[in-house]
Length: 156
Image (cartoon, rainbow, N blue to C red; front, side, top):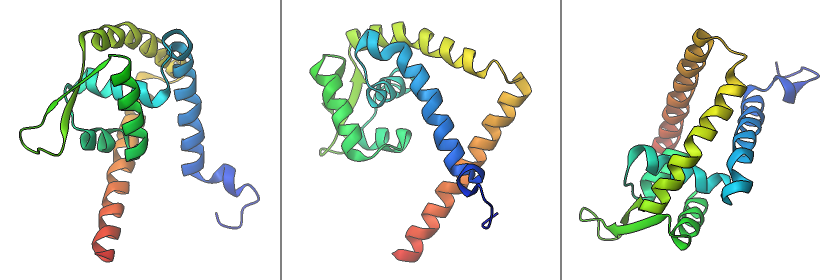
């Protein structure tokens, strides 16, 4: 409600962001110190580990991080030997990015720890609540993408 005393506390986008940062921060704590990875680097590794080779544009879309953050994370992973670039036959201006053997091994080592941290945090929810949360998040993401597309169409 616009006139509420606790406007920020009642503003769901803010609450979602704070919750996301808290959850991501806890999970990052599980692997950050031990493996020397920052959150953006792990996000890139997680996408590539799950989906396979992607372009940098694909990674921007998948992570919703800006191009600079994706580029920095990819460079850091490349510099450490966790990422390999190969030509993109469909678009000579971009490359396919994928995990190297060493990157894949690190991903396979971190994933169980990240998943265990997720399970500890989400243990307060029932399986049905988790499924409902997934459905709500999907619905909100689709709505945000639709509103963005409409805004771009109006501006263009």
